[in-house]
Length: 307
Image (cartoon, rainbow, N blue to C red):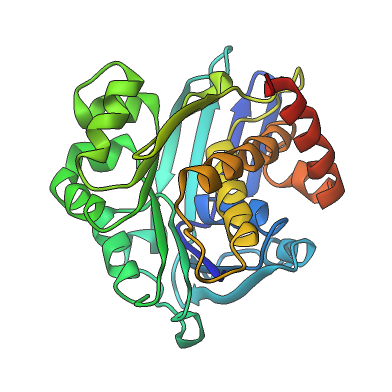
């Protein structure tokens, strides 16, 4: 099935206990697309400014399954920029600066050639922007959204409207508690289903993820790794691997894209891709691996969780 994503592409400055990286390619849409491209072609819709380095655009050549027809370079605009510093445990971070640039303006339009997209992922952006995006995709069969604490705090009404229109939601455990008022992730997941989605994936960092689906529930651990360099983008690559795997699994257009079995298996692929992202800054590690590396780690992981 055709897969499309919208979100941010930016330039990051990152400091972790393992080192630092300045002026590197970042953004939710970028991480998602790179991860998904190992499994399926992916259509990218995002906007950057005139200051977006040509070398960053060339980086996508290493991910040929990413279609850049929907990447707009806005004349006179400035690319989204973000800086963050991670604490010693890598589970929390401080935002050093955020410069919205073109992200604070009107969003990129969906190219006409993308209008037949079936699988839709709404990477982190304002809920109203996400809503406007899906309204341009009348043939969608599965729509999954990401969100964050900012939108829960300042745009909750828009987010609640969006949740009635999507099939799945991806967020972390703190955000799930903030949205529902329930500190228990299982209870929070069930409460989110009452808001509209068919399933919710609650990310728990080094402790893996929880899937709460109307047809079942499961918890998956993270892939155990000792090499932790930079957690930035792991959640987005996790989502990209999940959605890319779903697109690959569901070649039959009559298949149920959001079934419990399909989503559960796809989460394993998301977990595996994220385990590589964390091993280097930006896209550096994903540029070094092949699909065969993902397949090998998938089998290792499947063996670990099999009972």
